[in-house]
Length: 332
Image (cartoon, rainbow, N blue to C red; front, side, top):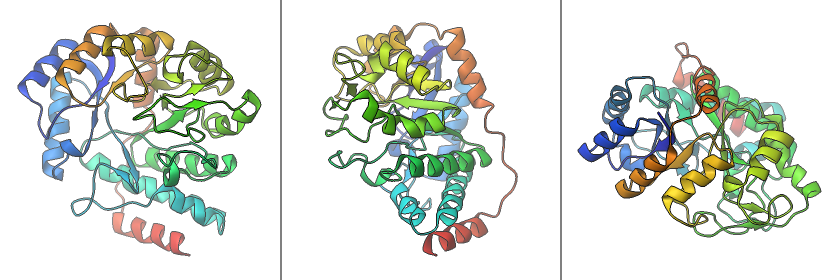
């Protein structure tokens, strides 16, 4: 097994992808809208990925709600963005927390039905004045305590629905003034000021999985972004924040990173990431990642195993009643 989560190009595994996956045995897969046509097709796809792996391989998706949703109407329900829960929190804290938990539970039940087992949620980035809108309404707000409380409720809801949650983007994306999909952000805040960004991650340090940010934090490592920085991963994420779950990189295809895909893969794993994440499904890039990844170390394998045991299969639930309860809490 290699320490990589890989994407795939369409609604079914191609012959070339199947050969690559069988040869290298990636630790898991990540799905996007291009892979999701309808529930029957998606369940067949996730079943096929598990048959290729011959194990209960983790299958990830970004299903946050709002503008980041791979499963969309009319075949799947719409879910509100995080900011909606943050706004409700200011009016009725208890209602907002329960609505966030129920919302995540509903997302989880939907994902379980189609064979997805990991959701890249909750986003724990603290929104900051001047920060790029790539975070924006995806954040629970500008108060670290509020973000932590609503993030915990979201993580609890996912777990109740049998889905593993991923806290992101460690150690905090909210201050970034450019989008790391396109450019490399530099955050020049002092270590003292960064504590506000770290706080929600510290509060949820027991999360089963986490994702790094492709951001340079000059107070910690002025030369390397978090994904490639041993100082950030060992000193801040594992040390200061105390996160000990499975740590994956953000997508290695983002333009914040430079160099070959082999160098990106080797760099993030050497820095301390357990998993290299590659999303585009470009076959040449995936092959480069797979060949550079090497064998998954024992510590990373143990973290992956623990994460997959974190969320047991859910009991039967009335989705309609849960939806009505969430909506009533949000609308007051």
